[in-house]
Structures are given as C-alpha cells and as structure tokens.
Image 1 (spheres, one colour):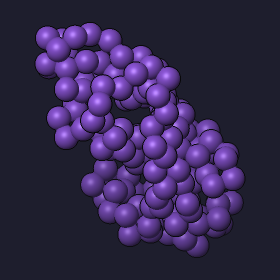
Image 2: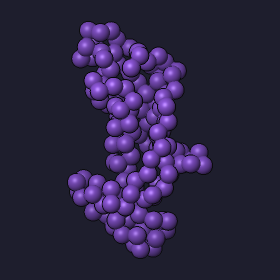
Image 3: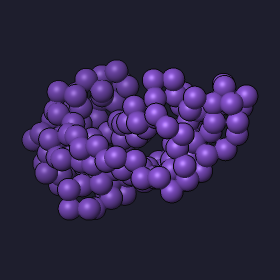
Length: 138
C-alpha cells in the first residue's frame, strides 16, 4: 500500500450479513435479543427481517478499514453512530475517506496514525452507520 493522504477515498466494499452470521455474532457477543435471530419476532416488532446488531456494524467498520490499510495495520480506536436499521441479506456498502495522516515512522508502533471517516450505507444511499476508525499503518 502506498502511504495514504488526507482526502483519499477508499474503494467501497459491498457486502451483506446473512441470518446465520447474525445468529452466530449474537451468540459470541452474548446478544440474545430475538430481533437478531427470529424473523417472525422481528417482523412483529416492525422490522422487515432480523436486524443487524449495532456492535456488528462496529466490527465491520474496523475489519474493512484494517483490510483496506495493510496486513501490518493496527486498530487504535473506533467509534460509530447508528442512523438506520439494516437487516439480514440487505446489500450494504462500506465507504471511507482518509481524514488525516499524522506522525512519522517512529510513532504509532513504527507507522503513521491514519484517521478515517467511515460509513455503511444502503444501496439507495441511506446511511446506516457513520463513524471514525483510527489506525496505525506501517
């Protein structure tokens, strides 16, 4: 990876979360709310299908940022705000823009600190999640 620069737009990544993934993530994160695994219950609560966990959105923001950066990148911080509900099998798009790059090779575990403005949007452009991810990138 070439050194990132402020204003750089990261390549968007399209993905979906399956019902099985939502069930498994709920199990490992001890989130047993029925809206995340029981379709009939989720529909009775007004959702189109089972709902993506907010913490899974945070994990997705982080994982995709790390994959964009490099194998040597390290997560320093992540924060996000949920803006809309996403459901199982709904097409989503991870997007990011480099906000800033600071430090030198001797800082941040031998790399530079990269701050990303990140989001997850639906295919129609509706934002589901907005936030920031901070990385140490070598």
